[in-house]
Amino acid sequence: MTAFGVTVLDLEQPRFEGMPLHPAHQQAGYSFFLHRRHQDWENPNARSSAAGMLICSDHSGTHIDALCHQAEGMLMCGDVAVDVSTQTPKGFTKLGIETLRPIYSRGVMLDVPAALGIDVIPQKYLVTAADLEECLQRQGTTIKPGDTLLIRTGNGRFWRDTQRYFDGPAIGSDASQWLAAQAPVAVGADNVGWDLPGFVDPVLGDLPGHIVLLVRAGVHIIESIHLEPLAEISCYEFEFVCSPLKLQGATASPVRPLAIVR
Image (cartoon, rainbow, N blue to C red; front, side, top):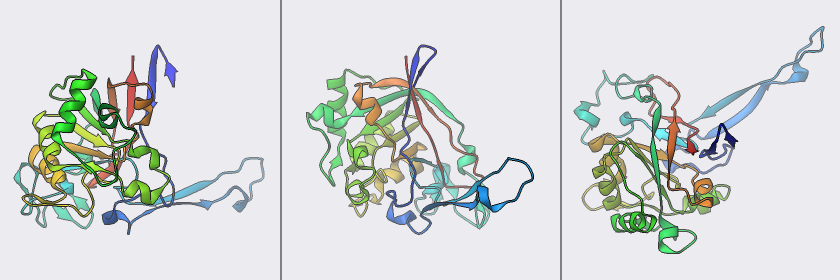
């Protein structure tokens, strides 16, 4: 969409039943149905109405993780303890997604497959810090503290092929550490869960990137972001907007990220 002299690119994947979900969130799933249809109500005038019901995990579709999402040794970001005062049946009293302000920052896309001269990163491949450094050099892009850093693997094109999307590449442990050292406000990738499902780092354990970024560095992670619109125009720097819902105590929020290209 182009208006007021700028182009606005939609970076959200469409939501539908059967879309790819990380195994940890498949039980909650995603479903939408009409519980009120136009023909269900009698009205003396011509007006009718319809309304639906949405049931989903807070980690479904394109979403951003809250800092309460992960803990290390039962300590969340900033050494906030996981206990009965912070973790309740109704959500978290600290570090919930409602504490994250809307993000408006410089956005940088690191187009890894383009830098490597391929269309898409191979399945199950772990993107390395060396890959990201090579990508920046080839793009001629610099990173500044407070940026939002988005990693394109090319996996976003498989969004409607659930198994293929799920089997896509991920971000390796050293890449997550390298990114955290850049002091971004948030990071994102076009895969199902940033880390490779089932991968166990010998030092950090499973979901190493979540530990490095969310717990240790306080950097939010955007998952299943749609980066093909940026890749199509070879756009690596832009204004980035991402606003989570104020879901009090939630561990994540669905989002519709936008890239503003001037």
